[in-house]
Image (cartoon, rainbow over all chains, first blue to last red; front, side, top):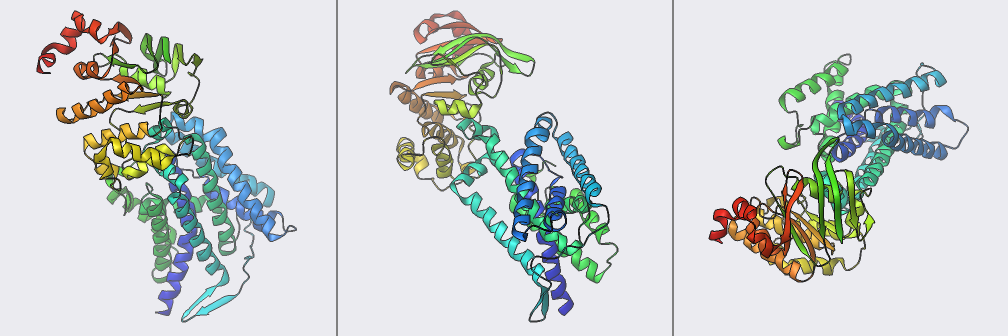
Length: 288
Length: 238
């Protein structure tokens, strides 16, 4: 029982980090049909800015810098690169984002080296005992930040401005015809996905330690999670990513640690065959 | 108010509308009719800004609008009721109107929405229902309401009657005729020429991307092309 509780907590923590990236995917996908695989690399850069590059600056400054840089990378990569390509061929743009994530990883490797570097959690190394569950301060922080960000996202979409965003998700051309500046809204959503990516990177660092290509695997696993729940809606993408985190952790704890990545991609293949729109997705939403 | 001169509109390098000159004056209701592929919808897409102008000019009150994005043209007062309605299916009736009402000046939003419900009482009873669950006729009313709630100066309608039962499109047609009589400018693309002539005072017959006939409803009624092509059996029934 204790192991189970422990694994569930660990799974929720892992899943929340995946979900931050998955939420970014879903926000952009519903708005543009584009999957931005570079979100993982943006997370990585956010992590390096927080833990590696500028140790002399105060923590809060490093965190803010990580978020700002991630927003800028998000917005600029869309405005200057992906958009033009996406208008002609969406798949090319998606592959381009994957290429861009490798460029970012190599860039960081040249500056900081390829050896994984430890990252110290801003929340200290303390562990809390809650009943039979012992959970680190950092893990708790992951859960709290996750809940706060997802709640904020929900509030944004329920607001008046969010109503136009939902209208745009349902019929972009009509929204534009009504006078909603959809290009500007999309830029805003890229900025939003940048915040989520930075948060994922800052929270992952102390768990996995920092390495240049950490973002690439994070991007892929979060994508599997989003597909598992359904990429066509933000809520299902988030739930799918959390489910995948739980599944992966339970599998690693009870079955095999070595095959956990194999499990993730086995799930991916299975979902694509059995329910391509995701466990919660409706058939009409399939656009993958 | 709106003027197209020798307009060439298409998709990428392919032009569908080759050389079209039409105009809609203030407080005037004008229709475009023509066979499939004549370029009616493409013309509207060019006016709204979804398709580029490849040649000629599109002006609004004398100013060139061909370079403006669709959302900028909307803010000039051009509102579209698109073919197939295109209501936002997962938003409620009220939210559909609110989204439209809050674009541009954010004033008298409630008042403007209530005036739409006064005009279409059937929508008032369904204000919290998801728009995707409305009947075709109700969706058409909502699409018109969504355009009107923006208090446009020109209402552009693409296929008012398409997919609607005759009883329903007669009703919707009457609403549009009332709007036109109250002084709203209307540009109507309509496959049903009889209906179009009831609503509008002037019109164009399009064929292969150009206007082959134009005139007032009275003039057009006497032309053999219009009679043969569009009024035929339909005309007697009405």
